[in-house]
Amino acid sequence: MPGGEHFLKPGEAWGDVDHLAVQREMIRRTIREHLDKEKRLRPQGIKVLSLFFIDEVARYRHYDADGNAVKGPYARIFEEEYRRAANLPDYRTLFQEVDLLCASEEVHNGYFSIDKKGGWTDTDENTQANRDNAERAYNLIMKEKEKLLEFDTPLKFIFSHSALKEGWDNPNVFQICTLNQTVSEIKKRQEIGRGLRLPVNQQGERVFDEEVNLL
Image (spheres, rainbow, N blue to C red):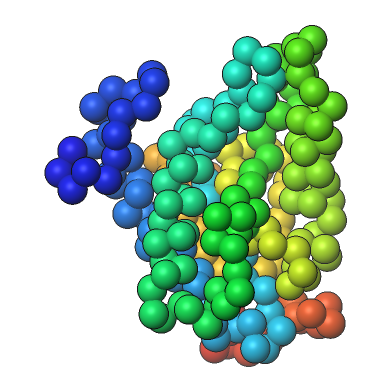
């Protein structure tokens, strides 16, 4: 592939790589829009969240025969582009004394039905640690919304496939990146609606500033 940004992984074909080139640019733009807003809104006590809607769960995360989580191409691309953005002069103030290797893994996560219902939960070799990690991600994203909005919680980027069915909602979503192809106007309105909420600050107060409330 021109530029040498992507190498074939097991199970990938060149058609997937062409598709991922477009997705990479979308992920890159979302990360940088996120960081731009974070620079502006963090001093106001507002934590910025970004939401990705993906086409296939396995493109973000899948599980091997032993039930261990394996990063899919979206997760790998995200971490590469996050580290790349963090090294740009425009964003250095956001990453002072930050271990980028750890940070790039801690700032993103997702919750998918496969985590709770997939075959990995029935695998004898699966470890309690894997189950605990999935449960923590589920609780933080789906239940502990106040904790998710705290600056001390590193998670900022949420990947979702079926969050609409799960009823997920959060007021501080400022970017929505659709890595899926939606032909249904109703579904697209539902996806965009996840970012049409009045955000809250660190005191739990709604922010009514029109300069802030931009999706």
